[in-house]
Length: 296
Image (cartoon, rainbow, N blue to C red):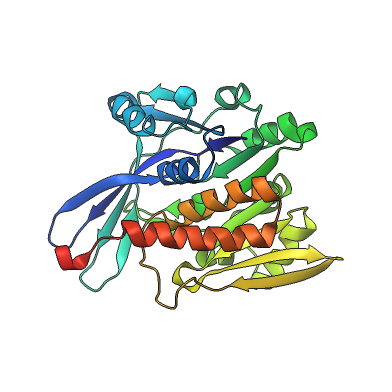
């Protein structure tokens, strides 16, 4: 099995109230390491993105620790690598800011790697690829039974005057949905994707009418919900968290979930079973990686 992963390389920079900073791999990198951990030794995970030249070698060294990851699609940029800044407040709130965006990934970088079983498109920055590039991917794999999964993620965010990410509707969200098999979003993302006021159930109905086989809404420590059609009727299935204790709020948990889901879905074509498995897998990964406040 070969999985193509398209989305901007990103690092998370957490700014704590005491003035300290912690930088760690985020976004697509968390998806890649999750995929590499759940696929077999014979499988290949192929990321396509650009990274600033000064970040390239350390990143390649990191990813080459995972035998399943093929780094041949990672290319150098003269522009900054995408970084997301999380400013933690004493109140417990968090402000998310982005100052630099990498240019969209061109189709020419993707074209040569489309001999795959599945394409995971994760909109890490929101401008990772253009709608035209998404259409070119779809047309290139259309006759090959290649499944495509779209994580809406930051496609639903713009940037305010102080570089903070702000929710804004996606004017062409129906065109994005038309091109893929499955779509993933969290509660805020799915609630803000459309210009017109829609309930989550109504939004799910629109996605499924457009040919999407499953819409997955992740709910953090509350589990997830999957919507799908049975005889033209929208079915909702809620998947509870694996444990009663809420999972910690860790940046990138949705990226872990989406990677785990897509790997399992490609293996089994079982939509609900893959959501359940991803919910369990993501919960285990996040709990293992969450900081231990008792050691601070």
